[in-house]
Image (cartoon, rainbow, N blue to C red; front, side, top):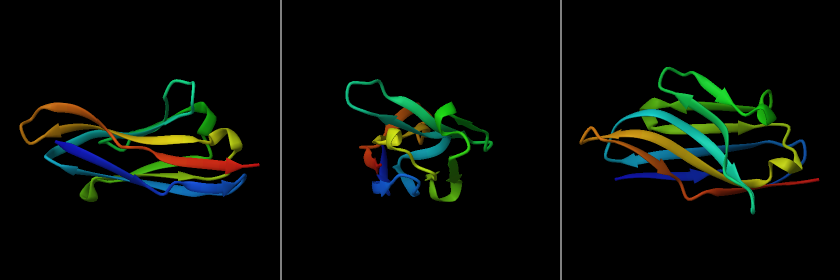
Length: 120
């Protein structure tokens, strides 16, 4: 079993910055990819950014140039640095990981979510 725990959400004014962190723990053999998604009430969860084991990254168009995803493989941790935040970035942010567990089975895990609120 794999657990993801996010931290770093909160309330910030427009133009400000926040840094989200997500730590994966449990029966991990390797992590193929980690990412961040977000969801607002009444809408589908959407990809914000993800990062693969070779450090290749992918961003939603709405956050390109403002958000940066990174990972520390030794700590099984992924980060999301969010700069120049806008009110439309307000959402619950979820961490996601594609994990190969110690039984060599592939699974997708989600964190519990962390609220990011950007005031205008």
